[in-house]
Length: 120
Image 1 (cartoon, rainbow, N blue to C red):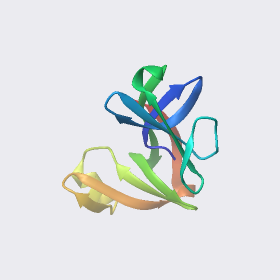
Image 2: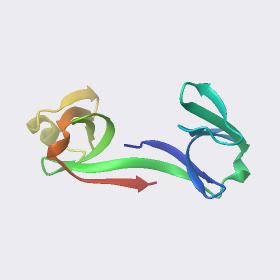
Image 3: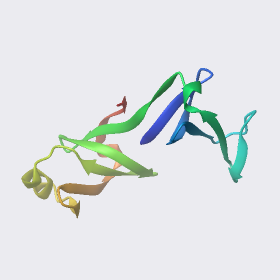
């Protein structure tokens, strides 16, 4: 499940972190030009202009007939955040109030449908 920035460099999409005029690209595999920053985690810093595409990727889904954003997963469970914007619905669903207007829950992955990545 992805939720974050991405950049396309040399025809490949990478997780990315913008930093002023540069981009930090990340990979889980060793690649030419990437330095290992943690076991199994590699980074390459490039000028922002090296990217042929840049945006934000988020994962959306439907659970119990309502729209959600997927924040993470743990095997058979997904951490989801309600995006319907109606507090009475969130309360009816028994969601945990994470912050004002923000409702989350752990949902059984088998109950979640229409999982899709959206580029913003």
